[in-house]
Length: 238
Ligand SMILES: Nc1ncnc2c1ncn2[C@@H]1O[C@H](COP(=O)(O)OP(=O)(O)O)[C@@H](O)[C@H]1O
Ligand SMILES: [Mg+2]
Image (cartoon, rainbow, N blue to C red; front, side):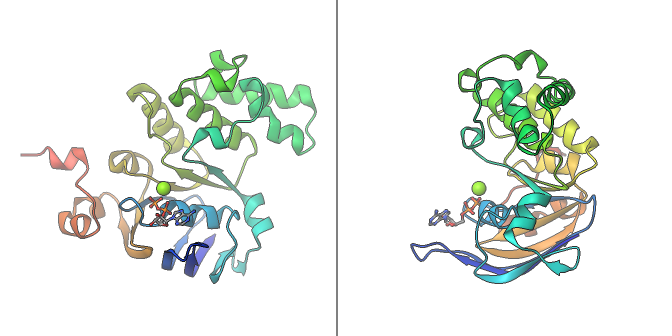
């Protein structure tokens, strides 16, 4: 469905954030994107979301090179910082925003959005002003806002950072049951094991390694050379 070929990117200050990214995502596949801080996960997601202009390399969508406009249409990115995503005066309107922008009738958009909030277990937040919510609540709301637009590929940047265990579990269950194609950038290897069947490891802007889960995350050596640690469920065994 998506193929990333030799993607390289230098920020305006000259910092080379991506130095050769290569991997593919099949339809409905769920892939964990892991790697130490600064390895290039967020920069890569911004490219796939069509938010950064490609300098070197290509992103193919269903076999043909994709323009930023196509990527914007096909993907939904959940940002690391939920404040970048929330725009409207109430949670329900915020979630409905992208639907109304795409021409859906307001009443229908609000109803669809309420169902989505229910499916995420946050319907009681519907009439609250988003800027007054806790960090974890904001994250759930930004999550709902992206899902409302029904993207084919969900791109998530650290979706469980700052969530309490119950909210984290809700996100994990939702992603596990989702029919979306998912690319999940995270430090939460335990979540990756619950949600994803494969992982791609980034190291200093390069795709260092990819493999099936859980096997890849039981390989302590590979994790260590890439600045990662065994997931808790494997580290705690006798
Ligand atoms: N706007 C920017 N300008 C310059 N360098 C940046 C910018 N954003 C990120 N970087 C650098 O690019 C590298 C990759 O960053 P990032 O994609 O955020 O990694 P990750 O999400 O894996 O932590 C890091 O070294 C980071 O400092
Ligand atoms: Mg990041």
